[in-house]
Length: 152
Image 1 (cartoon, rainbow, N blue to C red):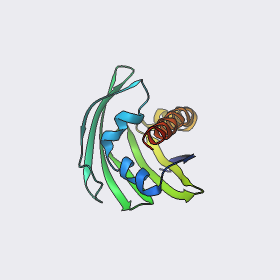
Image 2 (image 1 turned 180 degrees about the vertical axis):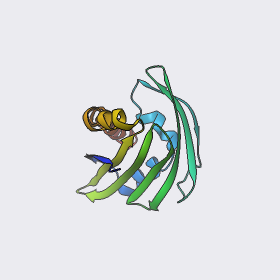
Image 3 (image 1 turned 90 degrees about the vertical axis):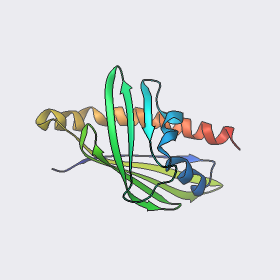
Image 4 (image 1 turned 180 degrees about the horizontal axis):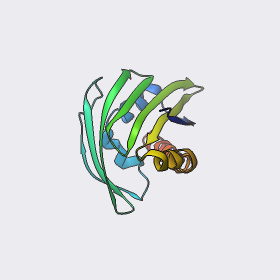
């Protein structure tokens, strides 16, 4: 099974170190999640350690989401990769990349994914998820910029 790829980047007035610290704590999903995603529980260590897992219980549009992720790669301050252990996806690898750019950073989210559900999951992954991710990461990037602009 070949996963699909979504990637989005944005410039933020923060250092790669600050962005890394923010993103390594899954609790911060509460700060950048869209209003439609209700976070009920986050179980995690405050710092990412390769091989350690984290859990998130949430709901979106009334549908429950139980997510277990694992930190697959932790390279401070530039790269943080989480993979799905238990999620709606049969393949999930989310790379957060932070690079120095001008007086701030370029933050890139790169997601390799494939929904569960056979042919239907593949169709939704190919035709619907790119727009879902575009909107979701556009909102997450805006919220992250707002968070760092408000804390400078």
